[in-house]
Length: 400
Image (cartoon, rainbow, N blue to C red; front, side, top):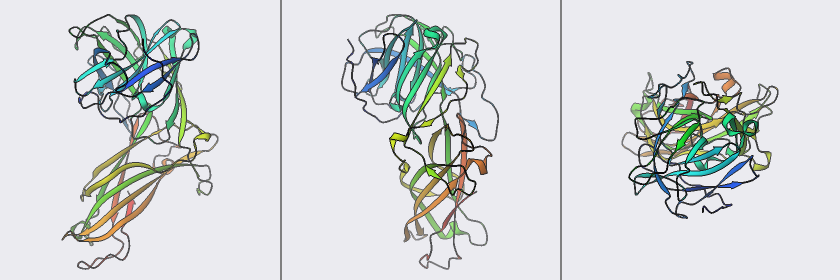
């Protein structure tokens, strides 16, 4: 019997199809007789491995902020890419009004996926779920008191800025091998699981979609005439931090730092039509009790920036539920060192802050779920350098 735990232990977020994963464990706490199921999590070594199972996962690519639409899938899933960077999935196996929550996790040593528990949840199910499993505390309720018609997933304590690509399952199917799903299309959640040992495991097929927007930061060092700064200096990026604010006045005089955490509810319709099952707009509601956000560390280390574009790190941000004229602003704080071409340290710990305002750059109040926004930044000199004189001022970082 699965143990019911009340402690959530956060774990590292690292890989799905690339086969570099760490194990973990998820169990279910029923919070009402038949209408709600909360997932509560435990550590990787706290129970037996469970039952081996094969997973094929696919994810919608992020839509570029320049425009375009994401294609609906067909098998093999058109408009989807292989799911990576996840080692554990929260899965709600539902029947009528009942819910059996399992954690599906990758064992790095065995190079296998396992489903928690001592047996496969056999029978006809509607499977709903999310990933990575430690992204939030998640509860599920059936639509119209019956999971066959859809479900609502409530994500509590989600980060206002995340280094994780938090997703929800939008389709599920099973098959006898990696090439034969019984059916797989968005909005279809039903599957039939059969008992199978290690020699004949089930194959589970999943389609997933993003709950956050993706911010991609690219850096370069200016090498244009007349300064040819990249020819004179080497820039090594040391740290990237991101903070979000809300404001209503265009002069930003009322900007207020965002809360650390928030909550969302995702309503999924079991429409079985190939259309997205996500009903209406998903809103992120900041949790005022979580306290003000500290800068979120996106990168720390050493990266030498070239004179052409270079992607450094990525952050993920959700929808924000802002009333009236409320808008969102982000502050990107970059820390870097400056060297001359003889590798002598000229300035250490230079700091630059850039305001990223969606209203000004993209004419939107906040970034949109499932879209990618690329921000290009250029390290610029503050005066004409001569030979290897010590720099008197921090070089600026300009947002193109």
